[in-house]
Amino acid sequence: MGFREWARVIKRDVHALYLASRDPRFPWYAKALAIIVTGYALSPIDLIPDFIPVIGYLDDVVLVPVGIWLVVRMIPPDLMTEHREIAAALQDRPVSPGAAAAIVLVWVAAAAFAGAWLYKALK
Image (cartoon, rainbow, N blue to C red; front, side, top):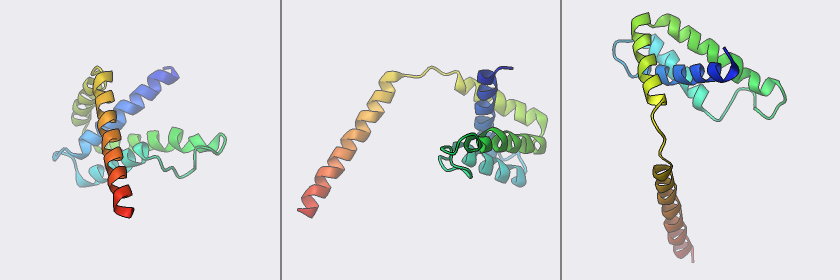
């Protein structure tokens, strides 16, 4: 398995764990660890900052897969397979550049409106 395929599997599993954390059929302790692992994987804050050479990415390369492995061992295999399939299907959805541009424009307009309001309020 190449690096790209490994990264795609990790991304799918993080999404599957997020979905699993919302499933009532899973034990509470697996849900709690799934929330911690997905939160850490998606968080911009790391234990070791990424700007530190080599070891900066070590936590992302080691901690996230180990956390995924631990949660997967706590979850019944058939349920985890179900959530992996859902995550894979959602991962393969087409991305709409037009929709992304519309969302960015809405945020820019909201920021401009808030900036103008704040400018008038502080004037």
